[in-house]
Structure formats: structure tokens, C-alpha cells
Amino acid sequence: MARPPKPFHLKVPDRQELMQLLSGGIQQVRVVLRALALLQLDAGCSAPQVSRTIPFAAQAIRMIGKRYLEFGLERALFERRRTGHAELLEASAKQRIIAMVCSQPPEGRARWTVRLVAAEAVKRKLVPGVGRETIRILLESHDLKPWREKNVVRGRTG
Image 1: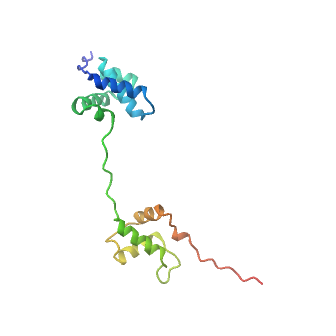
Image 2: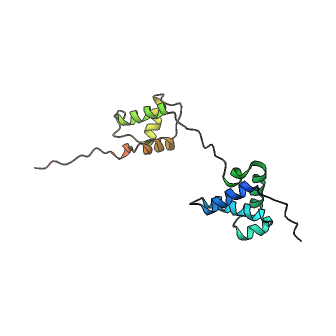
Image 3: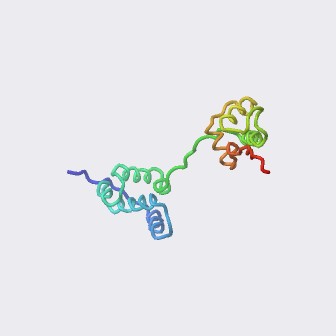
């Protein structure tokens, strides 16, 4: 026998905001599904009943309701902002590396390679340490492909 659902009630302004959100324009699918889950919880349905109509697990629906009760409607509908990772290179270091790549390659080299750029950046003390992938992404973001520039030698004609 299933346990009875915990009493859950939306505030009147929040219910109106949910109805407006659902009747309005384009929204993210997750936001719409969370709004529908909140309305069904408010109608007296239990989390397992709601999970039959909305493709969320019962535990996820309980968490949506819990977030609404603790933090309000915004937090229940939308995810928190994520911090992301820190920048690996400062802007000045990026500029110095780009300037280095735009200059002539070291003596004995025909062109810059990603590995060579990484090694030279550390050797010239532009950065304390940097990986190949960081350099590759930096060059790609500036649309630089120094490894493609070839010294073309053509045979003599005539």
C-alpha cells in the first residue's frame, strides 16, 4: 500500500505565474516539465503518480517540490548557475603566444606546430606551463593554423 502524498500547495501568485509560463511562448523543455510537475503536485497527486505522466523519476519530482518549498519558484524551475572552469591562460599570455606564432618559427624549423608552440612558450617564459590542447584551442579560436603553411617548392619551367 502506497503512502499518502505529503500536502503540497502552491502560492496563488506562483500558480498564476506557472499558468502564464505554460501558456506563453517558447520555453526550455525541462522548465515546462518542472512546471507541470508542480501543478500536478498542487492538485494532490503523489510523486509516483506524477512520474507516470511526466518523464521524471519520482525522486526527481520530490526534489522539485522540496526546492519549491525551501527556495521558491525560481529555484524549482531553473537550474543554478554553474561556475565553470577557470581560464588557463591570462589575456596577456594569450596575446604574447599569438604574437609568437605570427612571427617566424625557430631556426631550423619550417613552420610552427602545436607542440613546438607549447614548448617555445614555456622556454621563452611567456607562461609557466601549458599543454598542447590549450595551445590548440587558443590557435583555433584565433583561426590560426601555422602547421598548414608549407614552403612550396616548384620546379623550373622553361
